[in-house]
Length: 492
Image 1: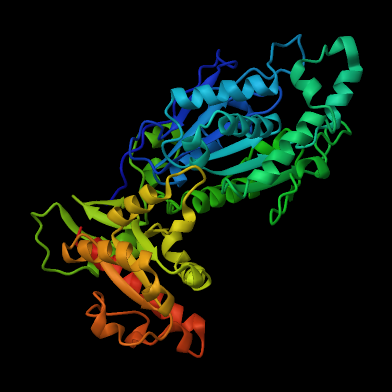
Image 2: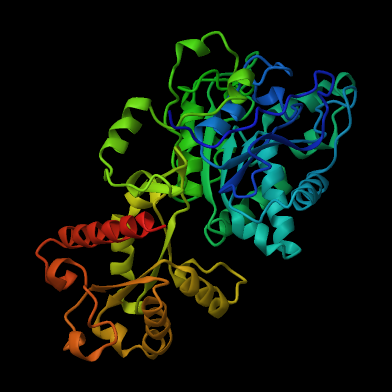
């Protein structure tokens, strides 16, 4: 029987701590080698636990934050609690600016921002995250901004909510807090914040997912479709048949919100999905907390057995690493199947070939989504980073270096004198695999270049531009890269 690394059970939430504040650990947060962090941030009148729980129970670990923790590999799941009461009778709150600074300080205290980061927000929580990012930009917290890969907005009033106006009209019975005052429909500060996010989101390379409610609560649609839409080009808000409260409480792992958010996290963090666990009869009747104390199976036993039977029979059982199966990003180590770190692929190319590089990267998307590879090129250098150091770092750590050959590439002093020279040094030292990818016909490159002795792609070294079907050419390149990374993974 082959298992993934053991996962600790979710941190139990104290029944008497409904008002717990700060960043609360749910699952995977103490794993120093985790691939990223996902932070849930509740809205007005909510809290770090029951906001997300379909039954609003404080002592039940069976809800979608823990489901994500077991469905996704090597991800830390957190929930952030803060004061956000709608009425002064129930508790205090802070202004949006103060909430943003409060969140930013907690992230720094927990060393969040050293690895990729996703925020899942409900209602006011979405505004708090946007304000936090703007504050981080103002105070030059560049690492946190660069590591923020995506934000999910669940029923967030980007331009205000008419419910805030309704609460205000109730007057003395509600005694609206500052949070409600700031949520009045089309409040100028919310429009300004949303305009900042709209103008900066692409520059900051933050992916955005938007869901909005379609069912009212007591006749009131808390956040209407217009307010829920941040107006970002290419981002289509998704209508959900729930009200403002239920939209953030998926009741099963087949729920539309759960499946959509899980997929979004995988795409942003480039992590593989956890495969279904084996349903052993002996586990019937056990609750989630009991199951979490046990190991989590990554594949049905029959599938793993079939894969292992396909491995070479003359394996030295005394070796710790028995074999690897890179197409599924799995290693068999000491009779355990574990996930492996993606192999970094570096693109060296001339600026005029950027369109062809983009086309090639699209053909590698399956390898990326499987977690087999991670790609890098100089267009991925974030704002504020020193480009030369960033490029040198990736050039010195990449396991595969693709040289995209064309006349423009050969003519580029930068490509030739810096990247080709360093790439070949690492290739000769057997620290990286250099692969020439022939984009355009180039005179006598085989006999007069340092990489001329290397086997090129596509097949037979036929330039991509000479293929009748360019997709077939890039498919041939992708197949060659897959074979190379599988061979590298097998040698680990």
